[in-house]
Image (cartoon, rainbow, N blue to C red; front, side, top):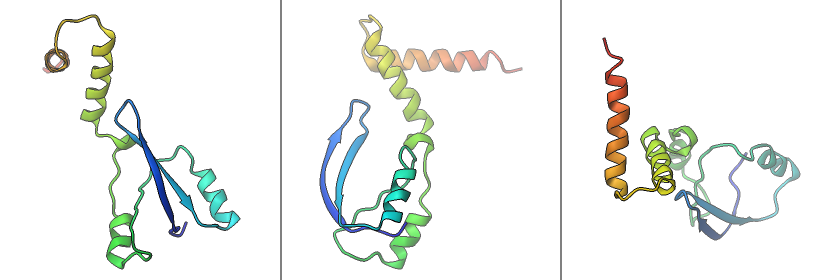
Length: 115
């Protein structure tokens, strides 16, 4: 799909620290809208610029962008899961203490499997 022009209209922070960003685009052809519709729930790259035209360097940067699984690194994912677990468990420890304890448990689990 070719780049679209539009207005950045807002954003909303979510509990997991991700962000929903809203744009109002100018009129776009039905084929482009169908392509957008077919890509709902897909992971990709968003590029927003105040100028109207992308340079070749910017296009190349977009094409070469590396994506993390689900948008987060594996360490971010496990930290987020442990944070939610810490919220649900009745504990008197700080999250930092809880995180250190649980990651040590994971490390020891896999160390025990080494020959």
